[in-house]
Amino acid sequence: MVRLSALIGWIVFLAGCTVSGGGTIPSAALKDPKKLYAHGERRLKKDYPEDARMVFQRLRTLFPLSQYALMAELKIAETHRKEGNFITAATAYRDFEKDHPTHEAVTSGLTTWWIGYCNFRLGPGDFFLFPPAEQRDLMHTRAAYMIFQMFMSRYPDSPHLARVKKYYTRSREMLVKHEFYAANFYAQKKKLKGVRNRMEFILTEFPDSPRVPEAAVILSRAYIKLGEPQKAVDLCNKIIVHYPKRPQAAEAARILAEATRKLSARTKAPGRGPQ
Image 1 (cartoon, rainbow, N blue to C red):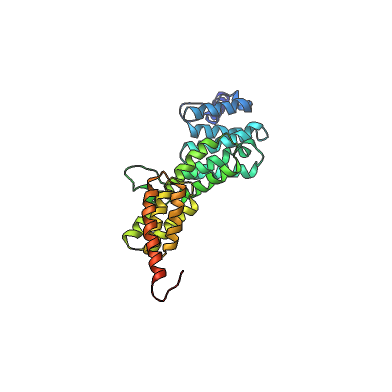
Image 2 (image 1 turned 90 degrees about the horizontal axis):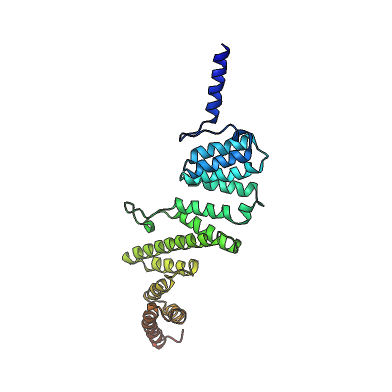
């Protein structure tokens, strides 16, 4: 009977120490938060995020006041991210920011970067079996763009700035591409106001996009067709001044000449004075 009780106790102990992937939590680690944290990291590096999460959760339960418990909280968010559970991961990072606003991971912008990255990954990808990204819902891409934009303003000296800029550019151009897609749809439907609104949005919201000159030329043409030649003149002059070496500058010069003729004809029309 004693042997049976001992055997049952041993089985229960092993069950508490076992993780998937063929690994177990060493008994020594269960007595030392540093060793337990290191074990969780090893499981994560070996691509066993669920195992690692179990280890980090155990650490927080056994050693709630340890510095490693705080570090484990961040690692738990990482395990969700590694598994592709981006909503859960973003929420975990956001909760960490609220609970520990002075922690280095927060003040350096690390948690903000991961929140933006998770939102970016929640947006549409470029998998060839799916419709192009510009044709799909970009709600999360917009959220990521705004987070990255805020990051660059708030953490200009962050060590994470380079990768934030990379994903800022990617999210921005996905949004710009969507606006061009929508403008083309309106153009096919002969809805010039829709074209105008989309191109004005690009110039206002994404002024650092390399596709701004292209949008400006399309907008200039729309202004002429909508009977707004003065706006076309003003915009074409800006294109020529700010982008003299871009091919759109030559196109802007042609549109400018047309818009100027229309303005001249308007001022010379019977019964109409200068506008």
